[in-house]
Length: 323
Image (cartoon, rainbow, N blue to C red; front, side, top):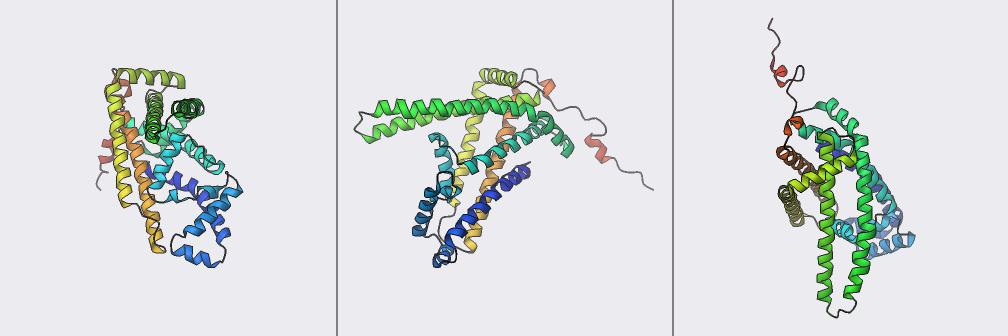
């Protein structure tokens, strides 16, 4: 499952990478700077390239080629962009939309496999993915509307209106910074709450074979209301695991120095970090399914079905008759 999600990530990132390669090649050409850039970071050329990309328009893919793409800065920049409500440029937003559609297709089979606690093989996996795709797609539309409302209205009111009104007369920058951090924390809690609601709605929709996205959301809200401590504790534990992975990445992430073979080592390290993030995402989902099934009052109808011929594991142990 991790390999499939990782492959989806690579396939969608490849066209963007080739487009960026063309932009860099076109800008460098056969100049002497090209050889200098190949040996390491050239800050003067980088500033020139970003200025050229910005002049081409905010929708240019070249505007994403900034120093924040190096090492752990990329992860921190992504978190900051989410909290600041920054919209993605059109090429990246398009790739993200396709990725979310692919994830919506795969997540039904992933949840079904984890809930059954036994191999479902390719046929069972993609059968569950197909059955649940449009149900999860309807849920994704609802979640998209909620997240859009949070960023378009709540975020704008908090940071563009309320924050400005509260800090307009402040003369100490530290106080304004504390207010902004507090607003980041409050908005982050809203995002986490919405994320928990939609995560357990996906679980209930697939595990209980629900057809209504709104019914799954209502059931998710009831589950969280009945088990708030366990759900929040699990989310916090998974969040700390993510912070631990991020801390390790911050310690070993390559810098901007070096060239040649060291660039390929930096690329490999970055891909291993992406794979670790995907594995953590799957572990996050598996732990939520386990919590749901262990906490449900009537768990019998969500338990793994009894092995039946010819899918019984015992069938694989039957040796053919000796001749």
